[in-house]
Each structure stands twice: as structure tokens, then as C-alpha cells.
Amino acid sequence: FSTVAYLQHTWWFEVDGEVDFPFPAGTYSLFFRIHLGRAYKRFGRRVCNTEHVHGWDKKPVQFQLWTSDGQYVASQCFLKEPGNWTFYHAGDFTVEDGNSSTKVKFSMTQIDCTHTKGGLCLDSAFIYPSEFKKSKAFLNCS
Image: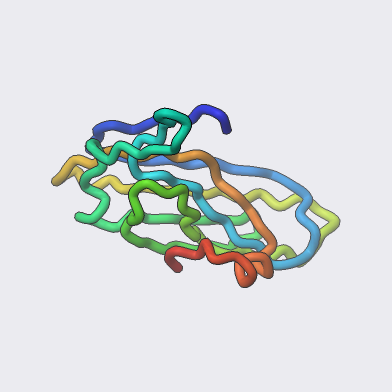
């Protein structure tokens, strides 16, 4: 997107969503696209301000994924790489019947309230056929 929200400071972070779509039969991977730091342009060059990036190294972020046919995946990892848009792998799911709609619910949380966190942009969630992740170098955690 051309504009995304920037989370400067919070105790509780929770994002969830769902899609209901007739996926063709196959295996899929869900990723969240995240940027640590505030990106902007200065004198025509891309710059990142990491002043507000904090707390993501204290406790891991939890990723969860559920499908309408009962599949469930949970994973976790620490957010790293300030200054770069990074794809974080939330999980994989399989569609057996490509003729019917599959509902996919997903979430990303970091709700440990013993410390604050901030400096994050969440652009989107992506669902790719899993075979693409083998050809891409964006897998950061599993």
C-alpha cells in the first residue's frame, strides 16, 4: 500500500484477519509483511528512522492460522532487521477440494504486558502457493 499505519508505542499488540476464498487444491503459506522503523524519503533516498523500535527482542511474536476444515498452525519468532520490509512466515495449510471455499483465519500477537514495544509498520498478509517460498529468500522464521 502507499500508506501504512506506524505503531509508535504500545503494551498489547494484536492483529487478526480472515479470508473466505475458493483456493485451487494445493499447499499454501501465509506471511505477514512487516517493517521495523519508520520509512521515509529524504533528498530522494530511502531512509529509516529506528528511534521508536523497541521491545520486539524481549518476547517472540505469536503467529496462528486456522482453516475451516480444522487445520491449525502456531509459530513464533522475534522480529528483527530494522529498516527492511520483511516477510514473516505464519504457517502453511493445505486445500484438498479446490471446488469449495476455504475460510482461513490468521493472527499475529505480542501481548506480554511486562514491557512496551513500538516502531512497527504492518503492511499486509500474503497467501502464496508454498512452492514459491522455496524460490524466494524471504522466509525469516518457521
